[in-house]
Length: 272
Image (cartoon, rainbow, N blue to C red; front, side, top):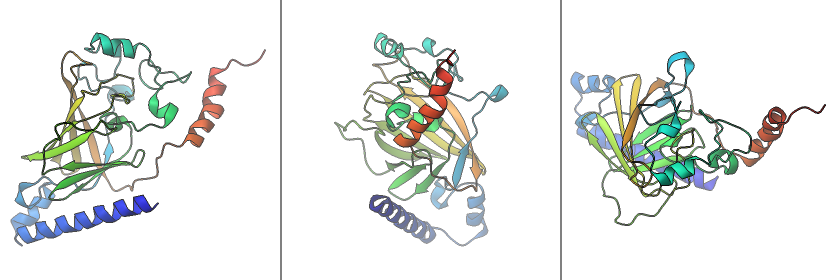
């Protein structure tokens, strides 16, 4: 509780500082006011503020479940451009979602151990995201598991970054787009719900823009020479929402109840 409170205080203070800096830089004229409506802050910085709800279902309600635009619904995940190392790891996955979905002895690290989903898989969940922009960093808040990322705007990657769940993220603005470059991942997470693996050489580039006031566009590029023979990418859309974020946590007790009350009953044949 103390940690969560401290984080909120820091983020709130940073946001207030940024608002003050922007106010000092802007001039009180109609053109500046109009910029807010077009999703641009003073100084030409894109305004990503607000809460965003994922809207990435395809035909017949199929959920986009892959970062490979050639197979957006992961209908054939085995055809991804994997190296032999990644293909061997993929043969053993038992995901609860996607083309290979099963709840029987799943080895999904999130479902089984409540591990963080990592980046970019965290965007695959149908929960909201939000942004807090400051002069030196952008903070991304995720409704799912209540985690947050710090994207620093004023530094480079360390030469030898530690391996972490969310990676080392740095960012920059390119016109109307926030570009996030992330390295330094461990290899304990999956890229998506289907179970596509990655190595500690994973390099993720996110491009986030607001093409319309009520629309947010996220494009994710994957590069991992240990796991894939080529880079690939996909784009997902979000809608602006006024719905507040809820509590969506991974809890062992709830996982156990779900396993016993739902999974076991559907996977175990009835007694004769």
